Image (tube, rainbow, N blue to C red; front, side, top):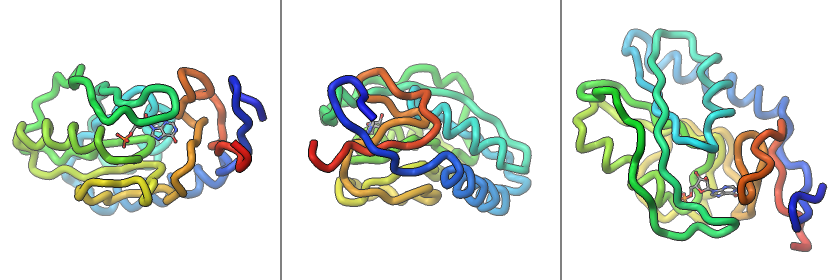
Length: 177
Ligand code: IMP
């Protein structure tokens, strides 16, 4: 499938994602029963994953959305912008950061440090996708959907220069690219 100027191939189907997200939801439910966790969803890319994940979580919880961007077209820029939109008091709360993808980890580390300063009871990370070959940080990722190779992916919330977030499946840049 051609998206903008690049060729992409089907990589993870909507059904495979749904099955895995259901498992993550059960896992989170078990670990956070009675703790009323606060999900902090990192926009824009995580909105699809978060919507599906939260509906698989079967214990009382809160959700809020923040924004922080580090990606320009197909390469991580290495620099990050400021955090926008955190209005909740997270002191003493059990926080679960929801990410679409952890690549170098630069974005995540920045968010993690900012949140840590606000005194939460705990912070864990739930990410749909994780690129271990690209990851350069030490923060542990508690809930991982899929470990994937260091190739560009899109769909299911993830974009390529603003497009393709609405695709149901995850697609990967074709080999020849
Ligand atoms: P990091 O700071 O390098 O870990 O990059 C994290 C952010 O970059 C993610 O939240 C995505 O928005 C974006 N990103 C990283 N890899 C990809 C990819 O393969 N496709 C689309 N976006 C990506």
